[in-house]
Length: 208
Image (cartoon, rainbow, N blue to C red; front, side, top):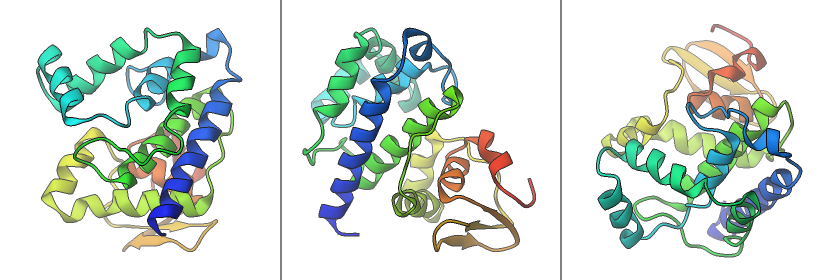
C-alpha cells in the first residue's frame, strides 16, 4: 500500500468512527470500553491525540511524570472532560492531515484508529466496519513488533493473548502468520487478538 493509500485508509476510518460516535447517546459514552479502565468517552478522547509533537509530549511528561502508559492514561483523563461534540470534531479535524505522533509511523496511526474504534463499538454490541485489507495491514504491523527490541517496547501498550505455537489464518482475506495449530477467523478479530482484546476469541476457531 502506498503512502497516499495508507493516509486515505486512515482518513476513511476516522470518518467512519466520527459518524459512529455521532449516533451515541449519553449512556453509550459512559459505557466501559475494551480498554481496561477507560470508558467510550476516554477512548474517543485518546483518538484526538494522534498528532502530538515533541513539545506536546514534553508538556504531558512534565504534568504527569512516570511511565508511557501512565502519561497516556493521565492525559486522556484530562482530554475526556471536553464535551463529546468537541471530541468528535477533534478527530474529524485530522482528516486530510498527514501529521502523526512523534516517534511512531503512520502505521501506528492506522492501528490506533482501527483498534480503538472497535474498543468503542464492540462493548456497545454494534458494528463499526473496517475493510479487511486495512485490518490486514494493521495486523501485519502489530505482528512485526516481536521481531525487534523497539517493536517489543511499543507492544508493551498491549496485553496480547499468548499465540506462540499458533498459526493465525484470516478467513476473509489472504493473510496468515505463525506456525502450529491453526486459529482462524476474520482478520479484524485477529487484529484485536494481537492487541490483547481476548473478547474476540469466540469469533475464532481453533485452540484457545
